[in-house]
Length: 169
Image (cartoon, rainbow, N blue to C red; front, top):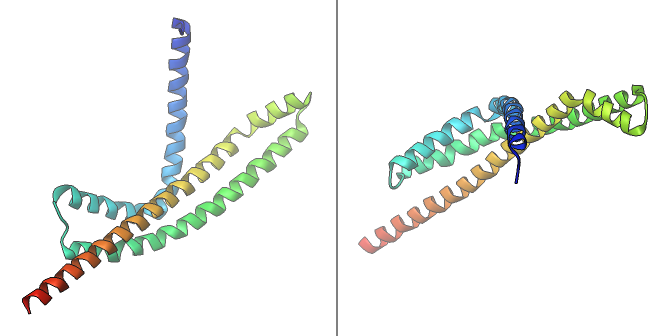
């Protein structure tokens, strides 16, 4: 069972972590928004349509089938750009760590500790680029699944209309 002192320490640590996480989240969001602004805005509109209707019309489905791939096209550029930036940030972190290790004095542990302490910003940026890349990639994967569903629904509706027209004849 945690003592009162431990509980206070954990709450304080939790607040610090959440504060730093918020900063990191702001960086990640800032990196992504350049590439996914239009896609996110449109997906929000689609969500509103779905939330407010029992079934989307054929025209709405066709609109989704046309617009989402276009927005995805531009977001894919972001995945590539963020991947390159992530790779570069990783190299920057390693290079700075190595430089700090070389100038550090003391034992190996002292050098490692000093190097880690002096490269926190570089490490945080590496994490931010990695998270931004993964976030944008995940959105594109979800949009691919959405497009597959839309195509299936459009195909089903087309088939139903064909069958209905055959039955009238």
